Image (cartoon, rainbow, N blue to C red; front, side):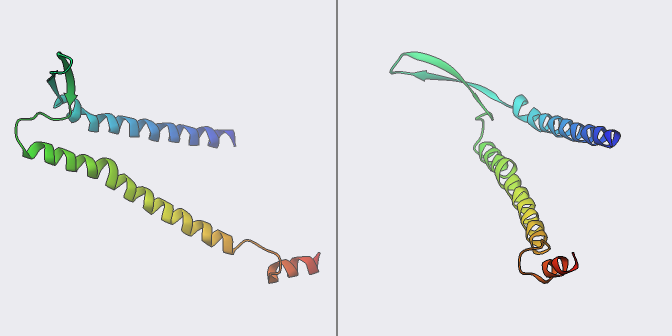
Length: 114
């Protein structure tokens, strides 16, 4: 039993590591193409630097970047999670029907044979 448990733990750790590495690979373009912008505030007479996720060279790039981020970081994960919740709920409903409860024929048979 201990060998199987440690094997399962190893598989879980490898999956988690793979997910983290894949996430880091997906973040590389964001790090490479980020742009430092200087902003001047007239009220305080100070300049501050802000990191923007995309360069402001043309109009189309920020729109594509924003839409891709919305799809990748919100819509797709929400869809995947919804599908998994649907399957979990379906499994729970099926397992609830097979539970013996008071007043069913299965319980009566068990009580009579004991």
